[in-house]
Image (cartoon, each protein chain N blue to C red):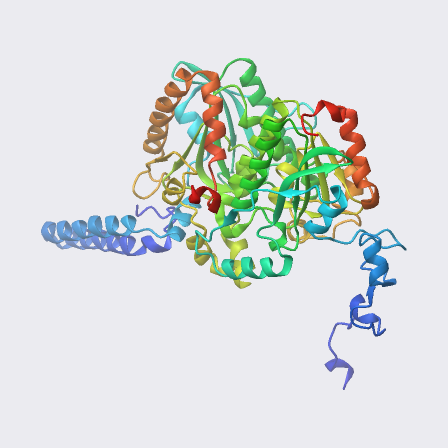
Length: 327
Length: 288
């Protein structure tokens, strides 16, 4: 933790300070040959309780900070930790190959599956190559091509969402990013194989939903999913992007919120301080959930599967209906 | 003032301020595009289309229904479905109330059965003047219910969009999910081989474009309508340069393969009828 490369989040600073103090104490004790075991033990207990106190009561904006942690595992990290024999499949067969939206075949234990995900970069260089995880139309069309491939060969589809949205630019508009996303929503709603959607980091609006329709939607504890960026929402509401933390509280974008609203089916646990601290544990948790859900979905007759998927999205929405409540 | 104290910019008058012509209240209006001064009545009679330059001004959903459905045939349905401020979003109840007052609508979409030249259809029209025609739970539920009605009654579906706002942020991710919900409905409609025509009018954007507006068996636009995924200002912010003229207008979209055809407002009703007649003869539909 005292690793200087470690990016300390604002709200973690009290813990970080305390840990630094322990190190200093140990260091000076060693020099002066004193026994400070009792003091160290007391301070370490304090670290533990302080830490669990902080992480028990995270507000949405603190969760956003963990979600945006630069070391947070990305789609390809989970693919390599959970699956075997991944072969990336490139291109949409009509325009090009988007590096932000990736996919290919792999095995989950012994089951062949089709993986589709949005890949953010791990550093600036990769981020430029990946367009910061902002998909172009050809990316969404590649995703659809792979899903149709999966349907043809009876392979379940597993998708990974981590994007702040589809790329808002000239070329995206010219090549019809809206149509590409819309088409995916329609096709995914009746694709004849099981689909499991995983929100692993940032679930940004239409660009996320474009690979987000499925039989199950799983979400990591510290992932977020929102109709608009928190900064964008704050600019509209208060003409001040700096109030993003307020917007995050209003928009209810956390896994806990979305489970309550029935937008997601299950929260995948992360290590207390976030998946970046211990990616293997996060990946193991996700794998366990994927295996469990997939075994149920693979047992479900196709007609029932599609009916349930339809009903799942059909039932989303909060409104009043006087005619119904009168009955 | 000494020259070095002068401001380093030139004051350019906005086009709106340039004309000092006093327009008598309510009688005359100016075309947004060509600045022609027009009699309000004349513009109204011409369906809010400028007789000089063919600029298609925005119209309300109610007016759109009048122009599309045979007189007295539109039956508004699902009107009991009403919005809820479940996120306690700032200003949402006030915005809903003022929109209701302004438009006389209960939400941003009208849905129901209608007849077009005697042909029964399921019709939805979104209203830009109701919170930008934005997509929230109510629009999602009303349109999906309409699509299911069309499936049950063997009707073609027409959705006319005027939704600049896209998905409504006041209902958070629930608005986003309406895109999936309506698209799933359209998938079922398509599986039943029932036609869906999407009519895109000024403006259609964001989550509406990225769901039902782009999913028509036929996508038809009015001339020069702004049709987009991301708004021009957002894109200018991304690419840090001015966008080309005509960018994201109907003609641009047709040029780029997203729109089947562009139809003038006065011809829209007959075009819809003719196209649907080609897909299937009217008598093949169950509705009379």
